[in-house]
Amino acid sequence: MTDEIARIYSDAGCSGTFCAQSLEGGPSVELDADRPMTPASVIKVPVALTVLTEIACGRLDGRTRVLLPAARRTPGPVGVSLMDDDVEMSLRDLTSLMLTISDNPSTDALVGAVGVDAVNEVLASLGLTGTLLSSDLMTMLDAMAVEAGFPDYSALAVYEPSAPGDPDADEIRRRLGSTAALDPERGSRTTARDGVRLLQAIWQDEAGPVDACAQVRGSMAQQLTRHRVAAGFPPGVLVAAKSGGLMGIVRNEVAVVRLADGSSYAVAAFTRSDPGRRADPRPIDAAIGAAAAHAVAVLHG
Image 1 (cartoon, rainbow, N blue to C red):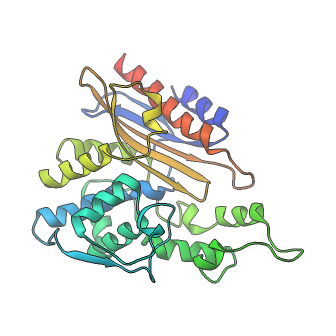
Image 2: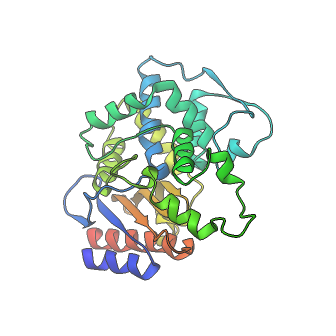
């Protein structure tokens, strides 16, 4: 099974790790499942779990209004990052926005509400020792830009070569590929096995209060990204997922796949492309779905 997952990744032009297992445990399909990988937005699952646990336990009020000011907002490709005006929303609604469309300003507001240490304490309490959140997203993006030779991320975002000898897009991507944010030994990290174990704990109401686990499951079931794990399965198969990507180099997804007969499987797929070349994301997304479909078929069969 390891060889087949590796072949699927290789054919798509990437490398990576993988783990799939029934929600109840038992046999698994794996590829380097304990190797540290850059989680990207997959790390938003434990962030949501931490915040919703604090709300369920009464230490935070989920109705608290949070202002996301237009003048100081974490960049991102979707959601609040694209809005011109200030946005105000409750803490619990921020968690939905973070998990369904991977909204970055919502994520940083939630990390700010509980703190990085609290997220890592939840991970440690679940025995997920291979997973760590190193900072909020804005701190990570600014640090990446500085390592790549820019004052901050805003300067990187608008950069265009203007003189002979200026680094081009390929050079910038290579620089970004060597930054701490894309090095799981120095930045945020996780493993495919930890991804599966986290999903198993959430789906079995063992990761925290029942209400917190249920809300994470509900939001993941509504994620709008459907072209990774979900793409590997026909209609009638339910997929609750959280995707993640960073700088076109990392593309990931963790998901729970529920078949028509009710059997359910946790899947974690992490991929990385060569920073030295521009990777077409479409075959990599399809490979994540193909790997998931192959693993679930083996486990179900």
